[in-house]
Length: 168
Image 1 (cartoon, rainbow, N blue to C red):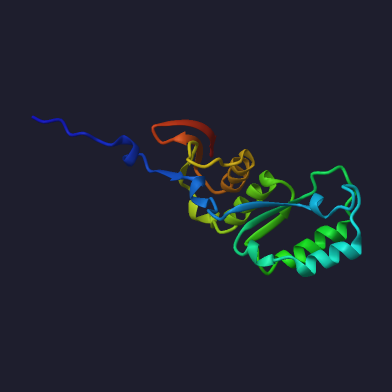
Image 2: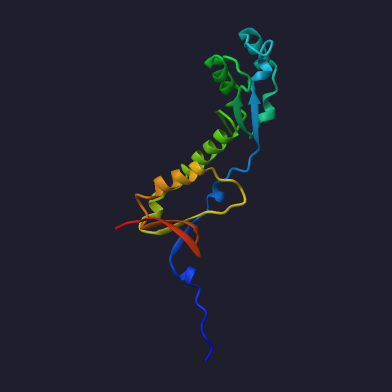
């Protein structure tokens, strides 16, 4: 008599949540305000406003933009706000900060689209390996958001998980 092969992972009822599925594929760019500094030290309002009028903002269409200043200069808050005003009509998303801050914001926005109640009483594995780098902060946030709903929460792959939480 032939032995029946049973896929125990499939039969376990585990739901795999792959954070890579929430990766935004759009291009990431950094806008460095150092290029707008006079003598590499100060931002002149008149010159900056003229730059903003003349700049080709369409180059940011659909892109994800991180706004920084890599020079040790005091940049007035209004300068970043003016950048935001101009980028709003073009960029998919923009942040004050570096590419890591941008990546966190992109995932934060993607997680807003999840109805966590859909995971009520389920056994969920948050997949650990992915082709794109998922920030640790996203794993922390997904754990925080899932815990009130799930029956159990694990990390890794369905065949090899690290238990994180089990409702009593």
